[in-house]
Length: 421
Image 1 (spheres, rainbow, N blue to C red):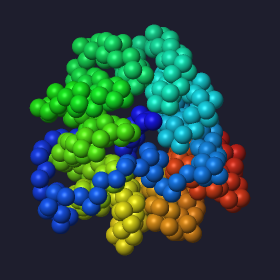
Image 2 (tube, rainbow, N blue to C red; image 1 turned 135 degrees about the horizontal axis):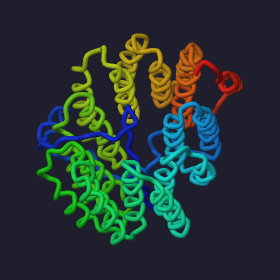
Image 3 (cartoon, one colour; image 1 turned 180 degrees about the vertical axis):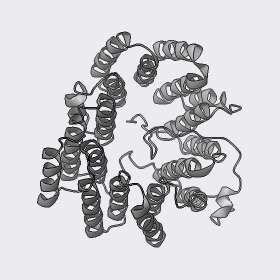
Image 4 (cartoon, one colour; image 1 turned 45 degrees about the horizontal axis):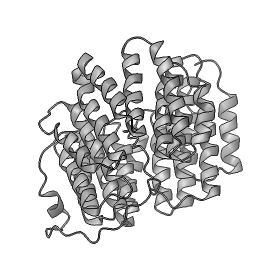
């Protein structure tokens, strides 16, 4: 069964995307025939790494447990604490560790407890655990009613998404429409994409596509980003006909093409990954090629460039283009030392994940060790804790078993979180 699509960017927020037709993208990769190498059944949502086993899943959960402990230690800054806790719980969800996430949801600080509770409800709905999902929606709604300001609206948007995936399109639509009426700039596009997600989850891909086409003339970045995400959500539905999956993916590609700079490159990487999962390697390569060209034009001084190159390298590795992945990874490695000290741990952790996907476990462990060294060198406890969270998230997504040395260093970092913060 299909899971909700959680999408995050290098900065931890969703992308904005623009739309233009993109007939030349396939040509850039040398495929001008319009014929793919073969449409296969899509891979499962967790297929960005080698297939999970009980031991690899347990390894990922162990690392995420460390990440949640680091996040929960940031008591001097409740905002950072809640944001970091939420990010780890979303990784639990993506790792199919829903029960572990449920056990920690009530410990999330502040209003983000309600958003992550709603996200858990959406995930449970995707797995047919409908009664549990309804109970979580009720909990999130209770906290929403006790929250004011923009945070209340953010909670409501997450609840609307969960309701849509649960199949309650009437309640979801009413809540989304209320949000759009109060803040059309931020929520109108999201309301449409929420409706489309519910229609897709219910098996009505045609209605979902029609809903998203209402955003075709939108020039607002928020509306465009939600449209792209909506098309990708449709494409991930299990049991979807090949032609429908192709239509949704091609619409997502067109939707991403007009974006500029690093946001365009990152969006295209996401689209390329969905093409790969759907068995369409030609368009996947074309999208990654376009993303790589775009990233190459970015100034080396941009902090986002190194992690972006690492992500693109991971995309090529998943397409079995090892030499191309290695070249991009070397570029990212060369840029990392010039990044601000607080950003380096996450950059090295991202490089480590890509090395693992390229089959270089020894190199991955060295890069994770470098990430930990950069973290240990940070003077204040708050940035050390935030950096450790990102390392643990990367370890968790990589499913790389923690060795005794890594555990010892993580334990030492945890014990050392004291003044100055």
